[in-house]
Amino acid sequence: MILSVSRRTDIPAFYSEWFFDRLNKGFVYVRNPIYKKMISKISLQEENVDCFVFWSKNPKPFIKRIPELHRIPFYFQYTINAYDTDIEPFVPNKNASIETFIELSKTIGKEKVIWRYDPILLSDRYTIKYHLKEFESVANRVAPYTDKCVISFLDRYQKNEKKLTITGVRELRSNEIMLIAKQLKAIADLYNLQLETCAEGIELESIGIGHNRCIDRVLIEKILGRKINARKDKNQRAVCGCIESVDIGAYNTCRHGCIYCYANNDSKKGNDSFSIDVSNSPLLCGFVSETDSIVERPPKSIIDKTLFD
Image 1 (tube, rainbow, N blue to C red):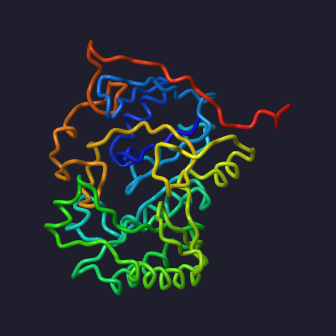
Image 2 (image 1 turned 120 degrees about the vertical axis):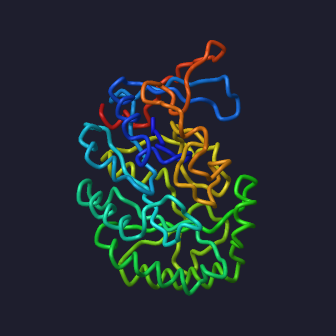
Image 3 (image 1 turned 90 degrees about the horizontal axis):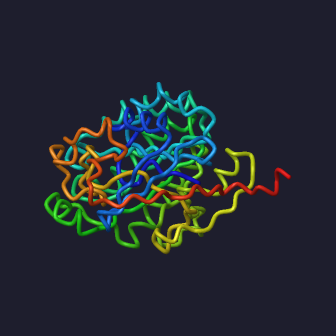
């Protein structure tokens, strides 16, 4: 079983204490985001977790506790953009983010830290020229500490539409995507970084940019040193190449406040969800009620057992 920690919120940044408490207790509850009264009980026992995939814009609070993961394999998707507080209100500034990136890479190894520069958006301030300058600025510093950079382009959702409109942010047109992609690829090549896209329908393979898989079979097999049996994740978009995983996060709990976020209804730091004390709860946000239905999810290893016979 692969656990995603998490596409829905930044657990390493804001909920490290909760995560390691749950790891010690050996299980976590995850409320179904659609059917609110349904809760899954998911094992965090070492023998039941094949790999953790962590997603973060600030894993600084997490780094000192990494030894507590014991022998469970893992890797990080680490986003460093170059936006100001009008776009990412509560994300650490670029320099601080880069320093944490380097610290994390030195702690766990460069092959386990993937730099994400996403989503790319345009406005009067954030032009293509701006992105090229800032992308190279970050690449120059993090390239010795990672092998890959993943990019994506802004998607509009109902949850972020109002905020994007107010700030004058827009999506890139097809010709703009091709223009910036070619130049980003040239920069990535200069710093010996593999450049791929995340869940993008546009084909950029003709210029050497392939499709990334955030929950990546190849990388997981490399980290495990073993083959795995896993299907494409049917719960993700058709253009997403990720294999199956179980997400233990909760929507509307991230405190970064990014205006482009699809996981928060409200980007304000004062969102009510943030103030709920979860330190003693198996749920990331809130508590179990008498009307909730709890179902234990059977742990299913993806490791190819035939290799051990």
